[in-house]
Length: 168
Ligand code: HEC
Ligand code: HEC
Image (cartoon, helix red, strand yellow):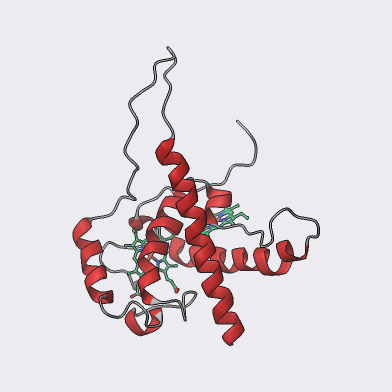
């Protein structure tokens, strides 16, 4: 059980690290128009979310950042054992930004514990799939460059709901 929790913590960190690195790249990108003009650099896009709702969640977590997520939130399955303070960053950077969607793709705004949107359960299944790829498949491939090679939501989704199957 303990090993499982550690594995999840590692996966959470991978999720975030991957998303943060990726967002750093997009933030630096400058658009070039067809006439070759370089458009002014756009500010890094914050995942779309209603600030009041975010503040409400931050308030709920305040002082309980290191408690297990399931002790602070109502309906936690995959993030059990994850520090509560990591839940919102995973939602924003890993899930919303990784898929290029708003919170409302998986939630009714404000009713976060609800299971009304099927995409929420898909995200849980994707989390489990990602963990299996990393721990059971990728980890067994010899001669890879990285010491701990990993995929996360961004690896496949790259800011899109539907991952690409070919180069455009
Ligand atoms: C791709 C789907 C997806 C997106 C997008 C998403 N979430 Fe989540 N969210 C989930 C899943 C899945 C869970 C349940 C996690 C679990 O089972 O441990 C969850 C749980 C939560 C919880 C805990 C609710 C509770 O009390 O149980 C909060 C709060 C939350 N999300 C906020 C947000 C916010 C804010 C955003 C936008 C910045 C967001 N989520 C975007 C899938 C998503
Ligand atoms: C190995 C590649 C891969 C990884 C890693 C991956 N996904 Fe997916 N995801 C897919 C594919 C393929 C689909 C199906 C798209 C389709 O319908 O053709 C999908 C679909 C989804 C959908 C349903 C899209 C919709 O219409 O709402 C959600 C939600 C989702 N993924 C969330 C996640 C989350 C969250 C993570 C990280 C925990 C993740 N995915 C990691 C490949 C991946």
